[in-house]
Figure 1: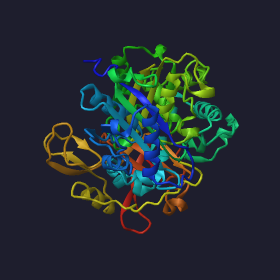
Figure 2: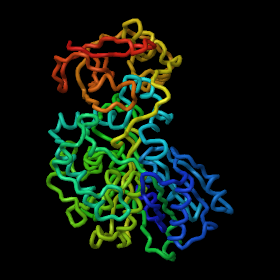
Figure 3: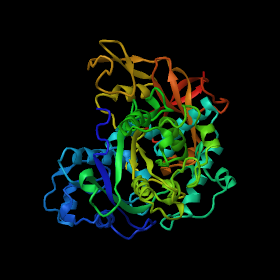
Figure 4: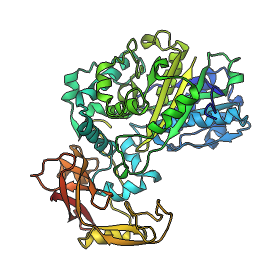
Length: 384
Length: 140
């Protein structure tokens, strides 16, 4: 069953709102705007949507989509509570639904006022999956993701000689691509010196190692492959998709190996299902809440061995015209934090040949990841 | 995270439950208490109701050695809640205890140079308003 969901589903529609700091709209409005755009992009009517996977940590439920979009017969709904790994986990749920005939067209929406509303850091303690660190770590003053993740980064640096300059290259790459993207919040050039002199937040993580907080919405439609081939857009067929949870998922500090993410469990499943190898990947949109998390995922995905992330980053060009085009939209670090749905949308654009200035020439197979909730990892591999 | 990333946190106090009350009572009494499975003897942390080795829900509490070594650390230069501002910069250390579980504490010993394996000792400190006590760390 290793090929379980292989090409059973495809992304047939994508939608994004403007990404801002101060949307002036409700979270629900952002999600509906993105959803309507995705439905329209797919050439569908809201009446065709019979599945929805709302964001588990968000403010909407399936009922809101029935109410706002007039969905006549919602047959499938689910949530995938994996924080920043939720969107790609949502794809896994949606493909499961269309593969089994439970639904034909599943909407996966996300949207929130991450800047002007409840700030991202604030949300952490409110989530039940963080009850453990909420009791034992946060009362000491270590409560924000930058603080909690910096222990992982520091150990990696101590064990393997990873440097802040490696993190800088990832930040600078995101910024370079954001500057080519009209819907990106940070476009000013970033030099190595800019990164190295940016304010220390939680040593070793500096300000420019940390993602943005943003307002906006994004959505995709997952359709059954046999329907997708007759739809208006070139489908992005989902070749492989998987989720993985690390040991001690709720408390990083109690994890036997704090330098390995759930991604390490998900990646072999996704690649095995897709039946491809790393050299087949033309473009990678890797969840980048923090620069270190990208470097660690490159290892856990198998692009290099554990501990070799620093050398791999040094020796690989990540530009849209490089060895491994990475975060061609600017990512969470420089485009916007849309919980990684912006990564999914960007991959689909790349596979359609519709990614604008940062289009990867001839992109045919691509990878997108999600990462969140202190260690959960998700991976999807798609082809045009 | 961004330049103004300050958080509004409703609760910065631990909310002990029957599984964790002995841990917090121990810190207040200057003892580091850990759960030990009453059936297979495994020591676990953070406190929780089931032994993940043998699935027993029978537990007793042991007093830990308070000796450990550095697993990793982080130095916060930004307070994500106003009540922690006065303590900046704050060094949080993840410690491998001799009992084979980990503990996070605040380093209170300016003489310590941190690297993986550095020996440390757990001490205790009352939180600012005295409502509870936390583990802090010194050179062994």
